Amino acid sequence: MPELPEVENILQCLRKKLLKKNIVKIENLRKDFIHHEDKLQGIRGCTVTSLKRRGKWLLMELNNHNSLVLHLGMSGRFILLKADSPNPKYALFRIIFDNGNALVYCDMRRFGRFEIIPTSQVDKYKSIKSLGVEPLEKDLDITLLSRILSKSKQQIKDFLLDQKKIAGIGNIYANEILFASKIDPFKPAHTLDEEEIIRLYESMQKVLKEAIAEGGSTINSYTIPSGEQGSFQFKHQVYGRKGKSCYHCSTSIWKEKQHGRSTYFCPQCQKP
Ligand SMILES: [Zn+2]
Image (cartoon, rainbow, N blue to C red; front, side, top):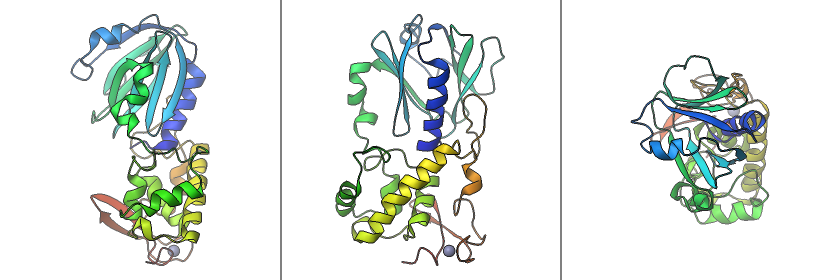
């Protein structure tokens, strides 16, 4: 599933290619995915005035005071093509711009979300309103992190996945951040000591920023809309490395199910 670093890369690519461009045509290829056809056709002729990210959500603002609000779900992908290119597999809709680009949304598993809502209502939109703090924004510092942690009895891995606490982190980066912090994924959030909180904060910044710089992690379907793949998967320390040697201490990496999600960790570096 695309997480903060992948969505950030998608955002930066779309900003470069689509900002200030006009929508000339919309093709709803699977009407059972987007039901509000009239709303969709209503954005024809509009200009993209801004592109933003909130957690794993993409927000595309238009000059008609409406915004496209998008979540890629499990397998959603944006692909930028020339307008006359054939549609890729699993294409659900296509937006054609006046610069000859077509933005195609493909989603094999169709867990993605797509809404058109007034821009003034975006912050009140249920799934956006409930999001926690952005991990790379200034408002998250060690004091605030410490305060949110102290109120949570969740295991720290579940805490990192909880979008209502911190927005944008999913399973890959939760595993990688905890390894970098040398914290046991099963430790209750409120029991982290001061040093662990500092390590957690610093690792979160480092891992997410590095992953963004590497174009994200290409596992399964994710690519940047212009077609490039991410390369952070080659830097994963624990995710997907069950049974392989820890790069720090050579102990075998373990994999355990934690509330339905795979948790990868080094039992030596991340001792309880
Ligand atoms: Zn280790």
